[in-house]
Length: 100
Image 1 (tube, helix red, strand yellow):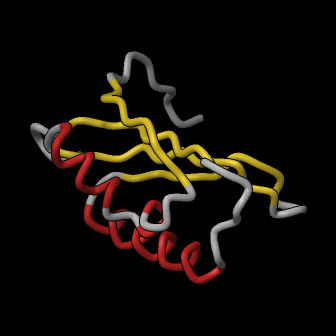
Image 2 (cartoon, rainbow, N blue to C red):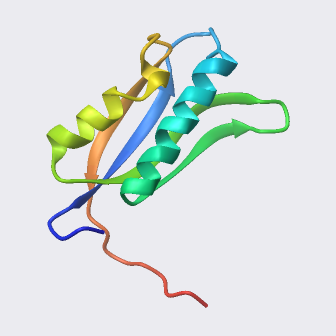
């Protein structure tokens, strides 16, 4: 992590019954991949990958402050159509495991 940066947790929630199109999902994945090359980021979905029933996601990422974290989140294509909403929290890591 960069000096002075903070970690944020974004929890994504599905708003309605409509599904995100494959194109939007691809664009969102590309967006997150690009971000992961610039800063600490880890992301995953909630749901059943065998049936592709996805009902949300979580993204943990590095940002300078809450305003930057919100701008990063708002720019994710998955939110452009209004099918998902998110909660955003600053995350203070208290304990971390060492690699075994």
